[in-house]
Length: 476
Image (cartoon, rainbow, N blue to C red; front, side):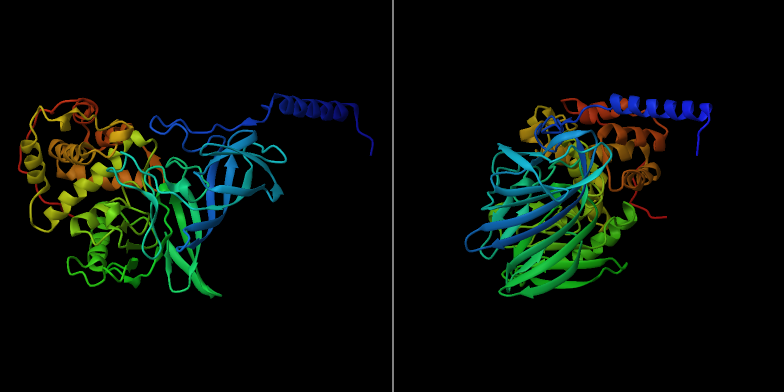
């Protein structure tokens, strides 16, 4: 069919415009090796947003060897000629991008991957990495001077990776600002149990091995992923409010009479759901291993990991993290008080709920017992620095900040603020400035000076007692 002159001119204009758009598109370039976190500049990766991790790991406790296949599904946020993934010490055998062989190089803890064809901005792609070796736990001053990450036990492995050890066992964009959903398949010798995040989809025996497939369908920071392996006594059920629960305890510890981990987990999950908002994940629970040399517990998403049977206060702390740290995650590690201060304050709220001591009294006891010249008050809680990001002030001064805020704005506004915060940033990331803004909005008060004194300034803040005696936590 012949086109009129006007139609030909219109077609020519459209084609010319399209060529201009193509010409204006930025040329593909490498994604950055890190997201630029002030504490860990090389962690995470630029140029893409991770959407899903498919982890398939096989572990031999006798040799300590891990063999893995990780498939990362991501969306390019720029035109990419190459991109990085974080992986520490393990050996990469091969890489594929979108099913095609991709070249890669190693530099320290970075894998630089060059796909066969550039990746266009906005497009989803997959990167499959085959790798193996003996994972090495990390050590240093960051986590209380303890080893952390992939830690060998007598019968398997205890996996607790905050803040930077997820990449000791799988290639990833290893920063909490780049959250993703996970499928984790664990292959271990028959007779051992592999426990991970989310819900168990299947277990099967394959020759001399046991294979378990877990799915965490909610967004998760990489450091919260786990693949703990060992002999466990497993108890499942539902909390009184109906949340599925899965608790795995090393048989060596199963007869401990110090605390009923299952019962406390169920009770605390339901109570925090009233105070902080609906439980954010599909399952709650715990992994309790015989690893006392680790010396810490971690809020691994949906199932906190404990290196021994810990007390009730520790359990309620780690479960509070499911809201503060796991569902609502930090944008940068300097805001870690949004995790630890809130979870520590939850311990005070739990005692108040149990009728032991009010959170206000706990606050006063801590405040009065810590002299003004103590180094405790020198820590700026909203930016504590890398090697002291888990200092006691981050936990305790963070908790004190919350009680001081409660005293300042009153119970009604304070207990509106907590669930409003977890709802506003559910499954996402947030920072201190956003919390300050929300506190001001809900309370109707200007709180800049208050937060400056408690979070951003060295020195012991002046105490301003409430005009009325603080009450208990009330539920409407």
